[in-house]
Length: 486
Image (tube, rainbow, N blue to C red):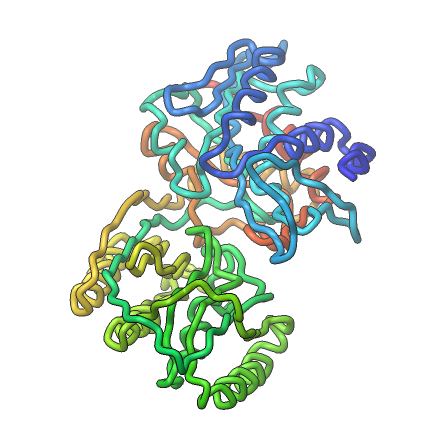
């Protein structure tokens, strides 16, 4: 099916995007794609190399007549979020992405597409490959592991890049210029658990929350989409007869969990009550989410060949319920400076029992460092009160807006001339690499632009075909009109 996209315009971009979809590249497993990009750069750039952490960097001299214009960095990340439908068989480490054209969009067959940020990478490749494009000196920075820790950007050495301007190609709406973003921090919580043996008068069941939309834990967090982990424990809360053996929900730090499941034990005498409780909860799910998540459901089924022979003690189960239920997952505060923009949020990203421990991963985001610090304190108090350990890792800074940026003003002017309309200039409640990169290059000005896509970080991810052409045209024209050197 991937060949279908080769007929789309601009052909050079879709050709390169197709090549990217054929190379497995989940976060932490970017070796194949970075090797490919290094060889590509060696063919089409004047200089190409990998830095010590694995980022790919290219340089290409200005085209004739453009030598007196400011050089520009084109930046994107090469990893993708690996999410798939429940029944889809796909190994993101070994399997290619299968693309489908549908209703003006390109999507994948039951998996994430990787347009975030394959579209940006394909655009950079195309600009370096196409000798007909007028441009100043250009640098390409294609980072690794943006999705799980911003490792590539964090590991970039200071002053690696020489350009004053940076175009980050990792946004998702073709009429928006982002000039600021939230910072973030990963939160890890661990709690030792105690177990006891299962008695003979209990039956074993699986409980599954599934078919919810999920979404990006930054750009979708304000849409009030349900968190499957939270829903699972909401169901457990009033079932005092239920015994929990194990559970797991979520698998990515920056995705709202779409599914969560558990193995539980119920006394044979309470089986009917348990079954009716699940039916009642399904009605609650439909009543509350029939517009936003109409396919969300709870399913229970008896496990007759169960290998589990232990469940949590009542005290451990009570502690787990207290931790899961009291962790904030959603919007904490809205911005007072930019109406409609989330300032601070937390996403309960992954939670499970493993090795006799409760293990939790959250991603907190904020454009206010003081708000972030306060919320970290709150979560630390919660964890310590319940006897859990808490750690904070991979913290990265926000990116403060610069409305007087020369690059921004030129990009707005180009956009208006091309499309006879004004772009929206704003900030985003998601992590972009601009804040980290510009912190390492203090004189650098940056904006973030991208084609239009929906459902990123979910199997519903889709890339609008017409926006790719618009986006490519815009980037080429910004390069052509780079400000003159002083």
